[in-house]
Length: 434
Image 1 (spheres, rainbow, N blue to C red):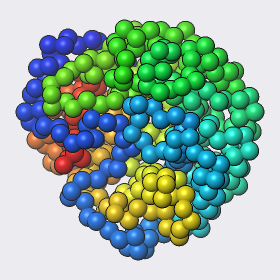
Image 2 (spheres, helix red, strand yellow; image 1 turned 60 degrees about the horizontal axis):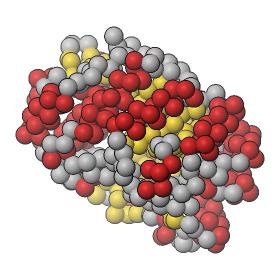
Image 3 (tube, helix red, strand yellow; image 1 turned 180 degrees about the vertical axis):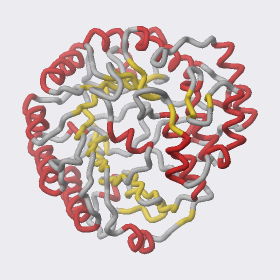
Image 4 (spheres, rainbow, N blue to C red; image 1 turned 120 degrees about the vertical axis):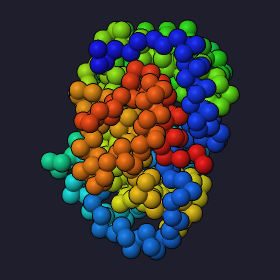
């Protein structure tokens, strides 16, 4: 059954992990912490800001990500760029700079085929009503979110500081998908992780209000943080099942796989099994939805699997445009009034091999087909003019031997076990961790 995830024993997980790490160890710090990915490696070419500008000006942008870098309190497990408890001046400076960056982007790029806008953080709803409206109004006025090509407008939220007025503002300005960063319902564990003010009662009430106002409500859970246990995760999953949310993501504070610890892998194992047993369909290696390719779907994630042009706006936001990857300056530097928001040291031109590897791994992590988990061999050859088996013959053979993928002349498909090892597969294919 395509959307069933069968539990795999810990012994088999340990045996598989040992074989994988013998083939390709993982030791980089990004294997240990959740960070926003800058998909490049040592083989990619360092490029100047002027060269980048010369080559990408006028490019059609299909997806936009906007980062709001503020949080009332810094969670113990978080490594994303943010400013904890910002003062009024910092927030106003950020809004001034991000409005300017959005307007400048409109002059620099084309947005005729814009498909998604995603606002993340940080905590976007940290902004008060007036500040949030300024951001949403700027997006509506400067980006063509009413074009026929446009598919989805979503925003990340924390289930505190979520007033009815903020919900109305989001609806009024066109937001149609919300993602709640719940992490856990447990009050004591939230306190241990400095998620102050978030209680189970407030979280349940917030999700219910969001469901009353939006057709597409997703919730993020977290594993491997202080106080986490598999039992606690299963209780959180049951609560989300009772609340009837449209989709659920499981994120993990990643452990170093080289230590041979399979607890995190087994947590993902149990998460996918639980929801598939309760009628949800598996949409990616860490997301379940009520029905695949319908409500609950995150369009921007699927577009990234096709290497669409993604423009990041706001501090530390990552862009992928025409084969280049680059990132903005961090939050403290960004809010200073300067002509360029770009971190010039981050600019890389992907090698052809790296672009191909990204296509392969993203299509094995985010499933765009309603019929199978993977990609068609013809789609790859049409895009790159070569065979995936010529380009990644050894890697495909090894992954198939370990039971992670199934290959045929028509397609490359992720297996039940393969879903649990995509972090390693990402490293193996992209050489991202060198």
